Length: 302
Image (cartoon, rainbow, N blue to C red; front, side, top):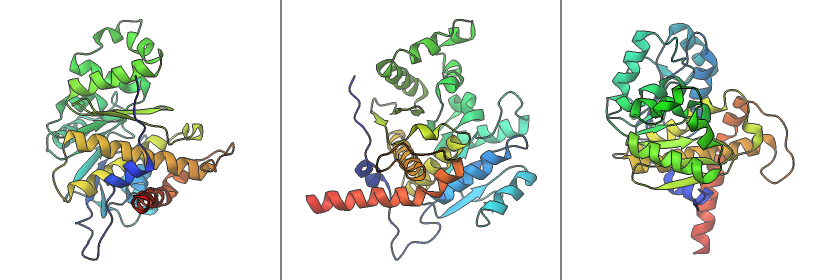
């Protein structure tokens, strides 16, 4: 099955440039309910990814001890309740040990109607959504989304047929992502060497902008923050539906992948070198600029 690859020019068509009339609220507020005392770094990395991907303001909500770490790294982040044009939830949360108040807070966010990027320890709650949503699982997390939807209930009985399907190759992975998106009524971003993005209306694409050097701890937290920032910027100017959110997710994945290539030194070829999640986040502004440059080249050529 042929899947059109999401390109720099595609990403640029989603990204928004500030104008002379822009201010922090017009550029969007992304709010994060991420991290935990056990995994505080996820909150820091998500806020870093969001802050470097174009949002006018980053808001973070959660444990006060974690908040201090977020503010040490990004002092411009606002903590506490307030305006949120889009949300990121679940990064750095373990669903098995998740406190009841954290679960309730995430369900409230999912039912708020705002666009929500759902990661890691909130994936099992995705079916509670009442607004536009994108889930961002890797292969091992996808069952957390599917089982509450009535898909893959046999996955808990030993043989794990979902794992087998995901190993059959790209076409089967694409089919799994698309059927999950339809059942969810929201977008699915299935992470991998070829990241698949599918919407509930049948639209899909593949993002191959990354590098194997991305296979390191914390990069998924940066990705969730980056998608959240792009979503907030879009939502600040008008409604965002599931189809638009799928394209926003693909754009965030392109920025994240290209930032990783820049960080690893593979953007112009070569074998590259090890990187960290913070290295990826640090290169997001340059990836953003590369996308905008691709748009200018396309405009100049037409």
